[in-house]
Length: 274
Image (cartoon, rainbow, N blue to C red):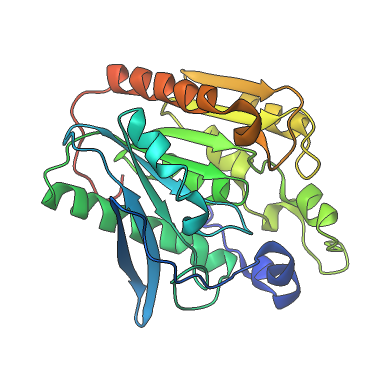
């Protein structure tokens, strides 16, 4: 029987202070976008901002952002996804944007499942039948890989600037993991989880990523269990400027990947957990 992974050591305040940079944001959604509140626990609601196309069969990209971002930071990005025929569904973590609560690693991972189930039910209620693909940038890779590894309703996975091993990241963030008694087995488990991913996977990473070296992204790619997997290194880019350097090519490349996901799957299955 597989051991259930827990995240108590990453939930310590000194670790959370280095991993999370929550900020409130109450900006109104731009024209054409929709804000939603997703209840993930009693009294805890996560803010979400959806950018939707008119096509009910358009693919749905459920997006988990980096640790210093909020969904409003993607107000100019959402319409560019829509221009490619993609629904862009961005969700905040606890304490971020319009969300309530306080972020922890355990809550972030548990909330990802609750968010997915809420989104699937919402899509069904709206008559939107396109596939659902999860995408995570930086810290958001933890939520995205978790869902791709465990949820049958997820049709594909995109990882941008994603985390492979936890201890190198903690060292970069100034955390003495050894002093806190944190071993790699106590970490996010992205490498172990992506081994279980069978869905088409697309990994993008910057050549000069100063936070997560590209060699670690290559490790994610090498152990990924998907038969259909792609890796793209962005020359000259660093951790935070892949989109700025690539522009329209970024969205076109993601669109091409999503088209391949659609061809490799039948109609979207309703599904809770699988």
